[in-house]
Image (cartoon, rainbow, N blue to C red; front, side, top):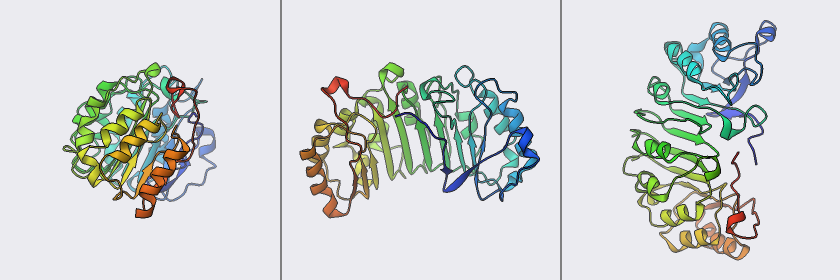
Length: 315
């Protein structure tokens, strides 16, 4: 699977594309606070830089009412970081007092494959927006999450086809006392993933994340190892949702989950895109569904052996 479609919504608001310069004069805009505004430029041979499109957006829309902003493609994302994109948003931050949700890198594979997207340091952006409640980023190349401190952020999503362990450790060291939802796509070693279970310890203990209710450690080629670690992880007891989807989970990981601490308190266990056998799937359903847990075991994949398993998103 690749990322083939742009985001349809953010923070419960439908996505709306801010038009290019030629179409802007003819466009009819919705109420500024009723949609998630996507600002983007063509990924290849763009005649306008993202910062210029954003400047037009700031002039055309009542930014004081904007609640959600989606950063789409910037010019040559496969070769250029979004440093100027971030600088433009930070410079205009006082004009967005209602901004609650921000996503950087809503880029499809036709614009730039996820593992080719150049990223940069995100702390200057996140820390500059104290009113922010939800932040997401796509692409792990040169991604830096060092020094994040935010009292109000409730949701953090990092989507990659291969995430360096240093980034994982930096997320674990972030100061996010209000965070309720954490979603990390770890990816595969071919595209830079080198995380081991020990790097996930801050998430497994939950000690630095006192408000966490939903944990997704997914799209990983070490999904069985992660499942085994979660079987006894302290954080699980206070979760409502546990997500190990999109990865290489098989019977070993599923067996570890079933043999570990009770999961019947969960509202949902998401395991979609997996390699779990039918007998084991039936055991999971029998153990959890009678207690009211919603179990997603869709997208069952097949493989000749462990080495031929693949994650949902890589390149």
